[in-house]
Structures are given as C-alpha cells and as structure tokens.
Length: 137
Image (cartoon, rainbow, N blue to C red; front, side, top):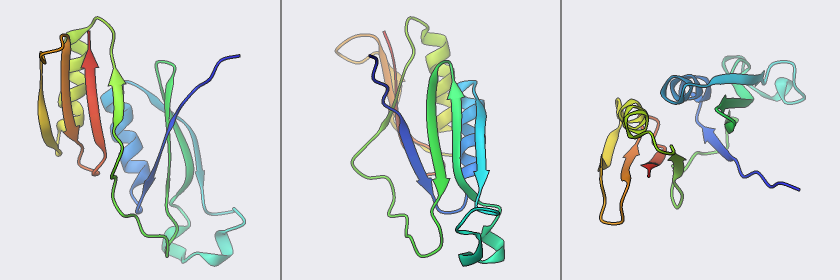
C-alpha cells in the first residue's frame, strides 16, 4: 500500500486565482473545480459567494494541491507553522524557474542558491501569503 500526503490550502475568496497561478508556476492544471453554487451550502451563502471555490484540485507531475475558499464567517488567519515544499530532482534550471515564478509578486525569504548542505534551495512567500520552499539536488 502507498501513502500520499497532499497540501490543502484555504483562501479568503481568491482560491481560483491562486490555483491558476500555481498551475502556471508548476506546469500543472486544475483537474477538479466545484463551486458553492448548487451545493448544500448554496442557500446559506450570499449571492457574491456562490461562484467561489468549494473544492478544487491542481495536478502537476503526479503531485497535487487542493484548496477552497473559506465560507463567510470562517476567518483565514494566514499560513503559519507550515511551508509547501517543492522538490525538483536534478534540474536546477527548472527549480529556479519554479522559484522565480512563485516569487512573482511575493517576497523572497531566502534566495534560491546553493546552501551549506548542498544542492539548491530557496524560500518564498507568494503573493497569496503561502510560504514555499523550493529545492533541487
């Protein structure tokens, strides 16, 4: 049996924009996109929230990121205490491109460069506030 660990990100109304951004950065595509409209929660939501994302999945090279927009009344308190890690094996140029793409509009926390332990590594907080680590051996 194989275990798979995935990342599920919550957003305050911009999940679709964020996942489209990640699809461009990672070379993936959104494979699942369900909206609140038509769901059991539909009747309890304001009209401007019905087209928000109830659940979505982005797939990129066998990996996936899932996400949704938190319904009104559920506060997003930022992304503290975790980091999304992207490991790209033996392709420093591709890893650098992913890092640079994620950094577009965000804030570099540690430039993508060779660290003391070897390989290449960098940390960035993207424009949606999600922290990332990009590494390559």
